[in-house]
Image (cartoon, rainbow, N blue to C red; front, side, top):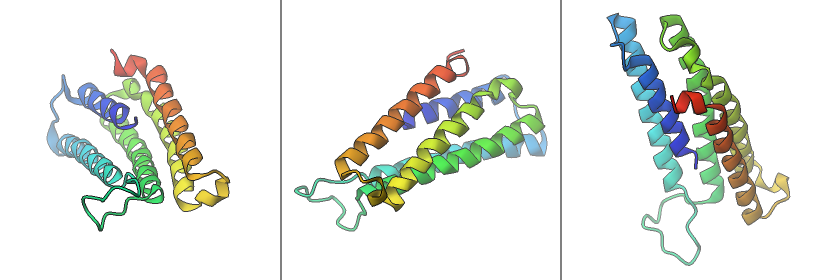
Length: 164
């Protein structure tokens, strides 16, 4: 539920910054490489998230050493979202200082807030799931609900950015 809007926004960000303007000079090329590598690292996070999806107890895991538990899933998900918040903040500063995108990157503010919120919820679910007082299923449903809200807010607030 979060992979599509995150990569949709990342792809759109590249379009805004580089579609009609080729990177020039050392800093322009460095900024472009930064953007590509941050998307690559984000993709690696999503692979780790997928690898940590809990497997039912009656199913033999394809990799017996895989750490497939709800806590591990929430930890990877929360870590990816906090990483994305750091990337958004740094990239917003970088893009503004290099004149890449300017006001067109205003969706970064919304993304920073909603990703931080869901990231903290996921990290809380990973690091202290008993503190919520919810069962494993109820906690999963709550995290899913927040992820759905995050995606909905993303597409409502960022509709002009995402759908020019």
